[in-house]
Length: 421
Image (cartoon, rainbow, N blue to C red; front, side, top):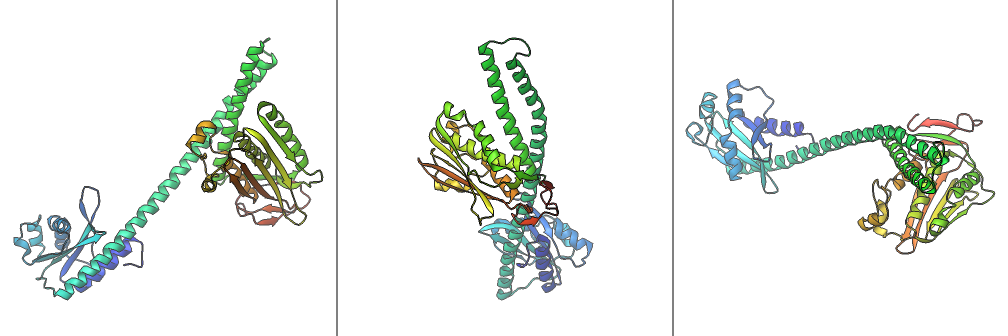
């Protein structure tokens, strides 16, 4: 009984074993099937039995309920005349003359009843009754564990199904939202350029706000789409040669206005002789952008320093983003890459965000075979360090970071689906 977590195996082991000891009895196991305390027969021996015996035992509810209520063994030597039986006529037709019921108790809670309906008078010694009681208690624990296991497994299946439906929904909705947002952005840009006629400076400010907010929303939608692809196994990599100095110069230009908008210096430290790497340029760019945006968001003054490093014998490119912002408690660090997580409620009120940026960073790095680490001190700042494979003659395996050689070293780019052998 205790060697299996399968409910059917536990029931068969118990009922067939006990029935073999009592050939003149028909054995049933009743179990609570709902919070209202309803007992239902959930098992009986696999051996053949007379139809009237099976029907009589399975239809009886009064006696098992009495055992459940008493939480102690119940012996009835003269079954047909006992008023506690709910189906006395049926039991009489089946030829049963005596009854013995044992409660199945786990953690002082009665969960079921093992019943013996016998065609002969049940006459047990004290040792036999103790033996059966012990067997029943072991069976109760084994059956309880089996049912908990099945419930957990079913819940996991339902949760997986629910997550899959959620991801599919997010993917469809995100895709459908991008089209109207692109139209809004294009129209606001056309308004700003005077395509529809001359506009005032105030109107220009309004159209710029529309463009900026629409662009922000489009970025969130694209992030959700990427997350959906990662979680459903549909994410792909497009490997190409990436000139890191050119990429960093492009990003530095994008953040040139930050110093004017905030009392904050955004410094880029990129060695002029830094060699390029084979990588997915768009995903690498998004990783850096998300980390820099995160640093800027939580830094009101001081600096954000982005550093690219690669030592001669290290097969990884190291990119660190260090800020002088608010920092984080050490206990929160393991959770910062969780989806939809912010530092705490107070931070969420002061700093807007969805909690998708760092989750996306971690997902992209895993696809690339890289890693990310973080160090932080409250009131002093945070340092994120991303490490990305740089070897030009490999591609990355399925979410493992294990390199595999390119089949044709002369190709500068190669696309593949994660998980594709």
